[in-house]
Length: 314
Ligand code: UDP
Ligand code: MG
Image (tube, rainbow, N blue to C red; front, side, top):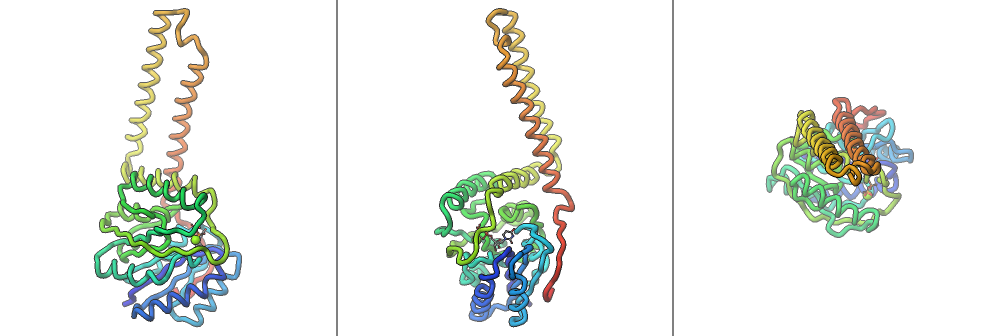
């Protein structure tokens, strides 16, 4: 039985792959851990796939999946999880920012200490403070509060899972940031955290730009909504609609009374007031309509549709 599956999603990381693969092999052999290393090439336009093929020729443990185009880290992870055979599945970024030296301890936490999921915590982080570290701190504190999961670094690429955990959830859209939340909703309880070494990016550049500030919060809102309200959006939005209606009704009533009592000085004589009121109500309605659309798109049954161009040893 295979101890470990190491799942590595990647996009244009040709320079890092040989060193990463060699390092993982060294750690696994030294710790007597049988393993497979699954690279998922998420539509690279550099020579990443060629490098994976040549690594796979040299090392029987190296396997690969090549996507037809870039579908995103979540899709890549999801496909890796489907293919993984090991008792423990460890995910890791391809850019050498996560250290393979952490593998044995993560493995032991799942196998010996009974954790279903262990998330890495980049306590000392080597990224740009303004674009990465500070936003990440804010995002983690919001996610902690909303989800009730006490992790400091929800989105760390280095994580370990018990096999049944990962086989029971599906990662889609941009949900790779919230796998612990998905696992919690799926029913898993013992979630742990381990401080891990983090290194500066050695080659290439970060693949995540500003869009994550839009997609991240929307995904969190969507996942929290689905987790909490499940199949009852009608009740939720119905209640909200009723509240907005009652507010409108109350304000309208007040204006009428106000007009009767002091016809000259009434608030209702001032058009900006009406405009503001209309904008608030319409704005809320549009926002909710948009949110319903997001819920449908993000949670549609065919949300994970991607084409696989090639597979290596899988
Ligand atoms: N990645 C991917 N698909 C994408 C974007 C990124 O597979 O569409 C991979 C990337 O190659 C790396 C990991 O996801 O292995 C984390 O990405 P990155 O290092 O760019 O993120 P950061 O560390 O800057 O948050
Ligand atoms: Mg990185």
